[in-house]
Structures are given as structure tokens and as C-alpha cells.
Length: 168
Image 1: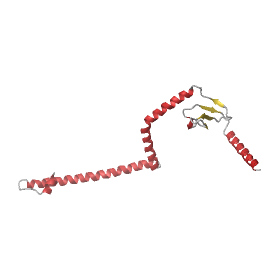
Image 2 (image 1 turned 135 degrees about the vertical axis):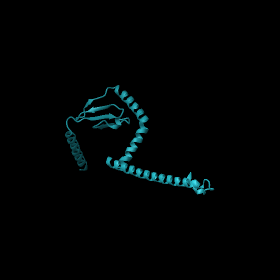
Image 3 (image 1 turned 90 degrees about the vertical axis):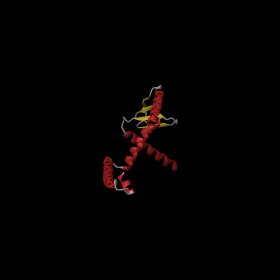
Image 4 (image 1 turned 90 degrees about the horizontal axis):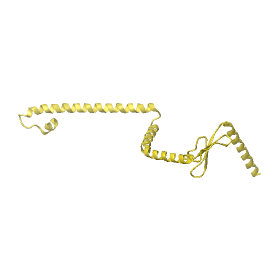
């Protein structure tokens, strides 16, 4: 009894799978390759495990409609090796840029928020700059006042040390 129910379930599942495949359209294409690990991979786009491997194109009935020429796999391997070498050279800068982009995307929801944060930071810098300029002006005024008081002590004796330090 139990064996029949499993077979019945398998038949229903395979019928549903066949209906789903048939519903995708007669011109649907699938890619197939044997990965470097020796396993077969299938997909609507060339599977990532197939990078550098010859990939066949199948029609909706599973028949091969395009197979790469036999010598093409070596070209593909050499192309993949060249791309890998180029990627390793560019990798540190690209990785740094990806990390920065990722940090921005994790911190802000959209470009408008980034611009708002930037404008707030610029306003804060502007306020700090004005405060520093104000302090510099006050220091220059104190220095000018100390220099004018030093004029009094030029011929009349030694000025206080604090006044000498302020006049410098």
C-alpha cells in the first residue's frame, strides 16, 4: 500500500513539473555544462559554476541546439585565466570602492539622504570655521592691546611678564 502512495505522489509531482516546463514556452532555452568538480549544472542563464567551461544550449525538449567547438574550451580557459589575473590586479581598488558603496547603502536609504547628510556636515564645518575666525580676531585684538601697553613701558621700566607674553 505504502509503495503505491509514493509512486502516485511521484507521478503527480512529475506531471506538475512537466506542466510547469510546458508553460514556460516552446522557445525557452536552458544552459548545461560540466563544472570543474565534474557535476552537471543547468540554468536559464549560464551557471556561475560553468565559468571557463564549455556550455551547451538546450531547447525546451532538452535537445542540444548549440555546442561549442572542441578547441573552444582552451580559449575559454585562457580567457578566464586572463580575466582572473586582471581582476586580481584591479581587485584592491575595486574592493575598496565596493566596501565604500556598501557602507553608504547600509547607512542611507537613498541619494537624497546622502545629500542631506552632506549639507548638514558642510553647515557644521561652516559654523566651526566662523567660530575659529572669531577666536582669531579676538586674539589679534588682545595682541594689539598688549602691544599698545608695551609702548608705555618702553622708556619707563620693565613691563610685566604676562604683558610681554601677550604682546608676542
